[in-house]
Image 1 (cartoon, rainbow, N blue to C red):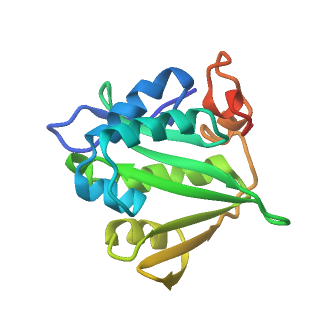
Image 2: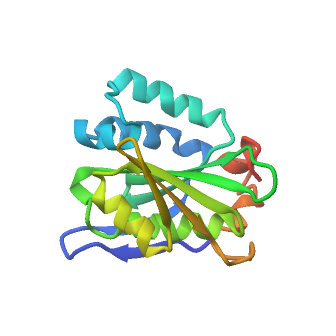
Length: 189
């Protein structure tokens, strides 16, 4: 599989966006623990200590959630979680983003959104974020998100128009990558 690689700025190594595999679980856990208090609040809408984040990462590994990450060199710096929602009719996939403060406002959220939308094909993406998370709101709007405000949160629905095709990330749903892919290992594919 080809990696989507781009330089954030001249001082940074290359950023690689790719699906996470089971062997990347420790990277995901370390990424969550590196989030500052504000980033944790923006993602979970409440305080999360390191132990709760580690438990969350382990819970994700046993679920149908798929992860796509952005690596800065060897360090995982941002993740989008793709969680299928039970829905009759149109398939829905909830998206949730975490981006470490050091790489926020550098375009990583947009790169992860593009990869997530490729991965879900014709499903509708649902993104719920805090209304004061202006960066995430801008990303959702940039990708055609239609929002409904409520109780300090904003829900975006993004309808993809592309059928599932053999893109780098869409093919990840149905490829085992050596049997070590979270999507296949935990039932999303």
